[in-house]
Each structure stands twice: as C-alpha cells, then as structure tokens.
Length: 514
Ligand code: GAL
Image 1: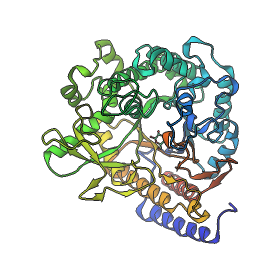
Image 2 (image 1 turned 120 degrees about the vertical axis):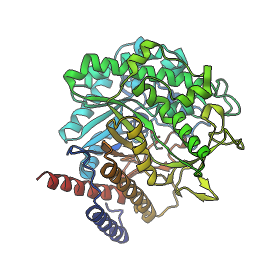
Image 3 (image 1 turned 135 degrees about the vertical axis):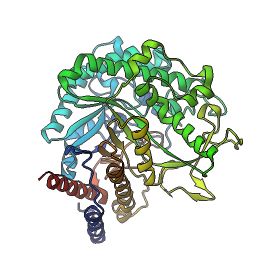
Image 4 (image 1 turned 30 degrees about the horizontal axis):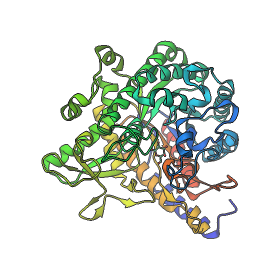
C-alpha cells in the first residue's frame, strides 16, 4: 500500500467511519431471509481476466478473433494477456482473502475445455487449470460461482454455425455443460449457464458491435445480418441451450452434487419518463424486450405477450416439448444491475430516431435525461448513471414477476476512465466508487428488509481493472488498479471499504444468530 498518501489514509478513515456509521445506524444488513450464508464476492470473466490465450491447448475463441481485427477495440488492444489471472490466480486469491469475500464469480473458457467444441477432445490441461483454481478457492473458504459462458465460444463453432443462429449449437452447449458438471460439479455449488444473453443477442446480432458482428441498416453497418430478426433467433437458441444444460444438470448431477443452476441477466431499470399511462406501458415493454424476453420463457414457458403482439412471425415459436422442458428452468436469477434509464412511449406518439424506438425494440425510447437533467450522475461510460433507487425497483420487479425466485446480484460496479494524467490521489482514492457501492448496497438491503426479496448474494464488478470489451483498457472497474505493463495490482480505497463492509455485515449476522 506504499502508493497511499497521507491524505488517502485520512480520506479512508473518513469513509470507513461513514460506512460504519451507515451500517450501524441505517442497518445495511444483507443477511437475507434468515440465511447466514449470504455470499459476498467479486465477479470476473475468462476473456477479460485470464490471458494465456493460446496456452496449454486452448484454441481461439470468438473474442480472440474479433479483438484482433483492427478497429474493433477502442484502444487497439485485446485479451491475449488481460490481467493474466491464468498464471497469477494465487496472488488474486490473496487479494480476495484480504477483502474477506466468501465467493468468487468467474467463467470457464469454453475453448480451453473443448478447443474444437464437440468435434474434438477434452483438453486435460484446461480441466487441470480450473481444478487448481476451484481447489485453491475452497481451501480459503471461497465458494466458486461459475458461469459456463460469458460471451466467449470456440471459434470453431462460430465458423461452423454462425454461432447462436444455429439450433445445432444447443447440442454443443449441452455437451460442454455436461463435461463441466462432471469434472467440477463435486465442488461447484453455483452454476450459471449464460452471462447476459440479452446483451449478447443485442450487441452480437442487432448493433453488431460484438462478435459475430451481424447487423443491418439502420441499426449498424455490418457485412451481413438482419437486425430485426436475428437477435430473436439467437436468443431462442440460447434459451433452449440453457434449458438443455439445466436438464442435464437436473437429471444427471443435481441430486448428488447438491448445487443450484441459474442464468445471469443484464438488468437495466426503466423508469417511465412521465406519469402517463403510455410511458408506463413503454417502460413495461422495454423490460419485456430486455429481461422478460429470456426469463419469461425460462420461468413460465412462453415469451411475454408484448413481444408476441409486436413481433408476430418474427418471434420464433416454442414447441409443446420445449415449453414443458422450459418451465421452472432455473433455481436462481442472477442480476447484473448497474444503471437506470428513462423510457418514453413511441407507439402512440412517434419519436425521433434513437435507442429503443423501433418495433423490434418495443417502441420505447431509452434516454438518460429528462428536461435536460440526467437520471443520475454520469460516469466514465455512456451507459452508466448512478441511480441507486433503480436497485430497489429492479429487484422488486423481478421478485414480483418471478415469484420471489432466489436472486443474486451477480454484478454491480462503477467505471472510471483510465487516464495516464491522473494523480495517484485520484487513481487510488476512488471515493465515487465507494459512494456508488454504499448507496446501491443500502438500496439492496432496504429491498430485502421491506419487501422480503430473497436475495442471496452480492458480487462487485470487479476485483481488478480488466479488459472492458470494446473499450479495451480505457475504462477501469477495479477495486484494485492494475498496471498494464507490470500487471502489478494495487488496492484502491474501495477494496478497503468493501473489506470493512463485509466485516461489519458478518459481525451483524453472527450477533443476530446468538
Ligand atoms: C457487464 C459484463 C461484464 C463487464 C461489466 C462492466 O455487462 O457482464 O463482463 O464488462 O458489464 O461493463
């Protein structure tokens, strides 16, 4: 911690006192509905953290290929090395240990386990790597919370099938999931099939800014694609792939391994821009075309009514068999919640072109401003505004729509710009991140207490600065700063704040049990 100046230390004391005060006075207690095993963790993903991109038998995946194409990543970088967690995981476990988390959310690199999908052999070195990581976590009392795919798939499958456009990929995913349950399921008790399939479908097949770069005008300028149809085809195959993996887990493994399985959604809160009925319905449609799009089929066996009405034949259909297999197709819902937007109706009164206004997005304009005022303080990324009220509304919405299915906040975090001109003071005294986490955790605790929401864990994005997809390394989300050249990890104020927060909560939980 030699980089911390005197004023950093002073500021930290101030903020710690503040947080302790808040914890004891306002009772930020995240113990959930009587369970004392609330998970506190940090989240990550294989492509953003691991590096080691062709080491030990791993093949190319879609993000390796995409990020190597000039122009795709803002700063021209890629995840070849990322933060090299593949080699440095013991060091990162020390950081987690210091913070005191009891869970770590990471994803498995599909191309490390099955370099050629189901058309090749299992890569033993890949299995060994995750075995070592899982064992090392458990040795420290940290529960692995594992995602099967966080946007990345072996390039072989993208080339063969055009990725998620083909129903054949369902069989590949089922096969891959089976292997993961078989090799790791004796120790992994929390599985999620997909990370943010809604973002994947939208960015991969509507705007085309993520692989496989499919889109059509006016949504984007790609070589191929159909922005009005392909997102729904990809989503349909993802939903059925999820169901196939859950089915394997439930029939072959769950009873013996005693774990649970869910899916992680990106969850934006859409606040109606006015109190008019039209804008309220627009906000509802925005949710249906974003989260309910996936969760309704998985929980209730059918797409939301609004999607049927607006999309007609552009929405694929589930067979009777699919519907049966889908119902109650998860044990928990993972919620990645960072931000909120206003939603304005464009169905009754047409809107100017803008995000959300098309038929295939539900005719609901998405905007961060109302009367020139932002919904919350802007941050270093154009999609993240600080609006902690959204946490309460989002969790309550999901609780009510999905019968209080157990929930985990699988990601929540704050972005700052990577800027070589910032002073150490600015770089490490991340007071805004601390305030963001404090206010969102407060909102979460309130929702659990006042609404009885069954939330069972909270994961910060992220332990370390890392490769932020198309933004490369220009944006930082870490509780620890990572030097891009030496890869040295240095704690920020927020790491210490989170540590103190966990200590206080653990104490509360213990005292509540006495
Ligand atoms: C999420 C995504 C993460 C991370 C985070 C911050 O949507 O799952 O991989 O990039 O956003 O932007």
